[in-house]
Image 1 (tube, helix red, strand yellow):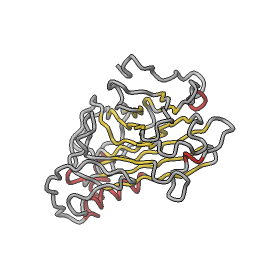
Image 2 (cartoon, rainbow, N blue to C red):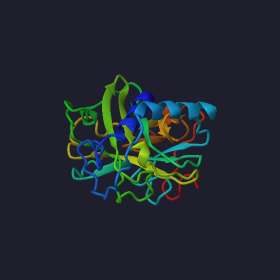
Image 3 (tube, rainbow, N blue to C red):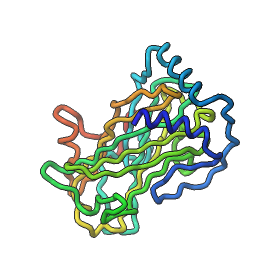
Image 4 (cartoon, helix red, strand yellow):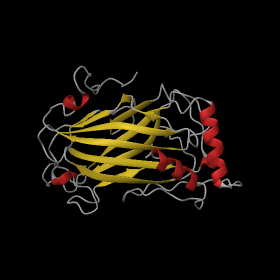
Length: 275
């Protein structure tokens, strides 16, 4: 996935200005796209130079970065939840899962990210038809992904131009896996601040087929890891932060098993997370 992210960052610099990511059937709001900086050197030379620069710094590091996962609002904002009780009777409703990061380091550029989200069924349970979001699945079209830049996001995003990306939903024996990747041209990357919380993207689940089996089954979403592309080849893998969000029907803690022994439950509504 990291190798693909490097390739995507490189190829994005060669894409036409204004290219957007595949948003998996969810159209983001239109935004003005600044003029793209032209690439003036062979891409092979750029990658080689970037490789040398990262090695000279001792490798790609983001020791203090955090991944932050929450429903309905970005982490730390009013209304954000880590345990969601979906209202399945409203088939016009959607629920939104925000993927945020705190970089933990200042950087003059930020090019993109890849992410792996694990959707864990309860022990012994299997994936119901509601969670069959793949293109040939019973609920195809009910999962959407938005990357950006998008002015409707309530917190900063680390992008100033549109980029290229894709989501991939794959059922597994214990649930499903959602893989995301998004990158902007390295020639047009924006800076990030170490302490700021940025929204990388959001996942949208529509309720329109809530009558399908499995809609009420508890589900734990674990943001297993992410590669954060601070620059070409400078793409550390991050596995720390508040990485669990539960789809809980009936009040059960859907993430108790996935968190493992000794891991605290998520914060509750009424107090701001991470503050």
